[in-house]
Structures are given as C-alpha cells and as structure tokens.
Length: 118
Length: 107
Image (cartoon, rainbow over all chains, first blue to last red; front, side):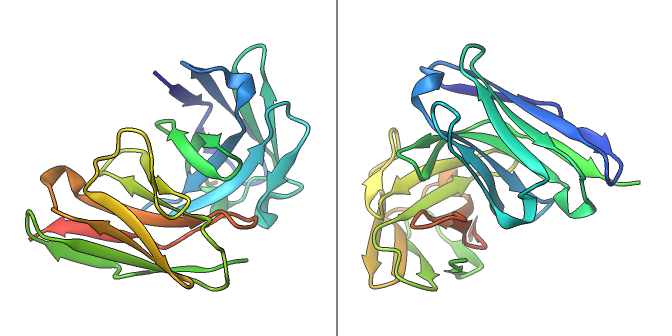
C-alpha cells in the first residue's frame, strides 16, 4: 500500500524558514517523480513544485521560485521542501504527492499545515 | 498560465441521479486533463487522467470526456460516498493548474 506521510509543518513568522519532509513507503520511491501541492484554508489546490526520479530536474511555480527548494533522498525514501523567506500567502496545507507519468498526482499524503503569521 | 474554469461551483443532486461537471481550458491542452475528488476532511484522490482513463480502484460510474477545450466528468448514478469537492487539473504545461472546484452535495 502506498503511504506518504508529511511532517514539519507549524507556525512560523514571516521571513523565516521551514523544512517539510515526506516519508514514502509501499512503492519503489526512486522510480517515481514527486511533487508538493498546497491548499490554502477553504481554497482550492495549487501545484508548488515537482522533482524527477533522480532529483536532477526540478520544477516550480513562479511564486515560490528562488524561495522554495524541492529535493529528495532516494536512500531514505524521503521528499523534502525547504521553504525560505516565508510570506503570509504561503499559509496552506502542503500535500506530498506521487506522480504517475510526469504530470498526474496519483497518490497524496494527509498533508501538513503551514501557518505564516507574526 | 493555463486557466481552468469549472462549472458549476456547487451542485445539489439526488441519489442515483446523473451528475455532470465541466471544466473549460483557456487554451488547447489536448487530453492532458485529470479529475480529482476530495472528500470532507480528506486528501484529494485521483479519479481520471488523460481525459478518459480511470485511476486504479475508481468505480466505473465515473467517466470523462472532451469536446474541444471543454472537459466533462460524469457520475452515472450518484452514491452517498461521491459527496465532496471535484477538481480538474491540466497537465499540458507547467505550472500545472487546477480548476476552482465543484462542491457536490446531496439534495
């Protein structure tokens, strides 16, 4: 059974940093592209970033480029999202997702809430 | 960015009724369209990808279709467990974008 378990969310002040983790199990992690998708409170879904199987290719939405970094450790079956220079508009639940193909989000974690507020 | 416009924003339907949700893409995305279901308090779940392909474990009462840049999700006989919010997503070009969602409720 595919399992994705996010951690690392919490309350953080504007301008500070936070690092999210996603522990994967139930599949061969290194064979799949991975992604982060966020959902602001009572709002819709927004893709944040994706990473290829080996980590050599990364993709970001414009609003997080230069502030967020997606990475992975295939030996530890773990996906990361380093979030720097956080803004109030980054407040959301962040989901880890496994791709099928390059573009579809086939499996999702339960999400971790990030609140950016002073 | 490619804009995805869903309609209606909310929908109330009876059990066993046929339900159709539509998604309009702002430009040609071919068959690069997926549908997700998000039940209350839960994570989204992939229902359909590539416009018409059912994801693993998804009941056959769900189906997808396309007419030009308009995409449709059809539930042939609404069940209680189908209640939730439905999102479309284009996968033609980054940034991958989602529609605003359609909230499906029981009448």
